[in-house]
Image (cartoon, rainbow over all chains, first blue to last red; front, side, top):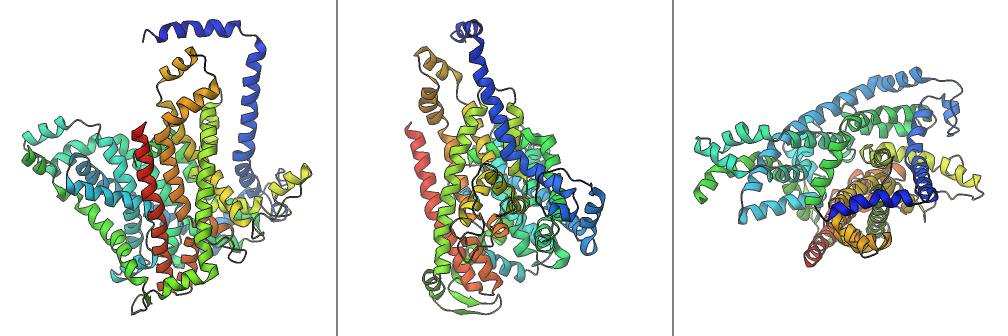
Length: 295
Length: 288
């Protein structure tokens, strides 16, 4: 602590002595960075928004100019009502899949994360390896369909939910065990001395302590599952089974000539993750970093 | 004490996760090794030995996908590490707009891949697309990003980097922030400049973060499907086919055995690269 003190006192003195020119350069660099960043990362979003407001003729020009006539309501109503309100159905399906998958993930992965974090020995090593390989190895597509088919779950809601849970398990377990490592074991011992069994200990004492990590798992898994395209494509096909991402993909060929509708659709689908991001950006970033660095 | 541990932390708690994981992930994964040796239609199967694999390696369109997958994974991973590190170092300096810049770079990570793919297909349109119009403005005639067989794979890789670099950046920022400041102060006392600081402190000490990004980006690249499928569908011809898109095409064509062989090849490629790399990177970390 003491070593830092002289440096802190000196720093402002030095900067005061510096001529103003020296501060201009970093300022210009920052302005330049903001500009580049705006061009590279924000223009695509601006492009989506502005084109979703245009008439189809104007959107066909694919330009960045402001629309001459704003056709907002008409575009969005049309996108929402196409093919018997397909997009609304897709929103419903995606929401149900997301909510149930995340609920199951939170319960089963917190339990497993707890045990895996507290235990040691051979059994734990094997299980840890199984979790780690799940992070790396991609799912085997057709054999998974075969299993779903055997169980009568192919093209059903419980089927796709089970798949989403199975594929989300490794990452969530890693997030939970990382957090549980910070909870002192003395709490467990006290609870057990009071006569709690494993299940009571976990659900009465530990589970409520996990609130911060619960919300991280909920937010990150929700975004991942809501945005997922590949797994509904394989395991949840059929017109009635539309999910949000699949609908967007199907509309891509349908709206070939009306980019305004396609972008209205893109915009509608980007809103839910954007809202989550507005409120929870810190949580998302923290969760993703801690989860992946520990992996 | 052991007895207490056992009764306190009963393995019965892991049963629900273990059952779901085994039934819907482990069993299909193990069964894929068997089904890749068959011709099957989900109901009946006929054992045909290594025919599917021979087919995969003989057919240039299929074999090409292995090469493309490796190229794609290495390029996206490399660029994400380089750009992510540069942006992270920049964002860790004293800036007024730090929060804004970080959010702008990170947000694409949360947007659906399909939405990003569609948007960039339009931006990369050869004549009307915004990218080529901007290039034309400064006097360069831009290429047909997605229509040129030599370029299509790279164009998609570029979009992948655009979408994923924010994730790499936040991991790097976390890594850099965890470096104790007294290292930098010591260097300053010794008269080192900013380049020295980056080379001798930031880079070696954010090694765990760099390792995590390398592994995650590489695995992500080897598994990519949605972006390539939205933007090129493996085309033009088979020039941008990846293992994952070949698996989907064979599945659609009803060649389940061949699709599964593609899946097994994908596992092997991932395992051959990811596990040794994971061990190698983590060992190096201990050495320092």
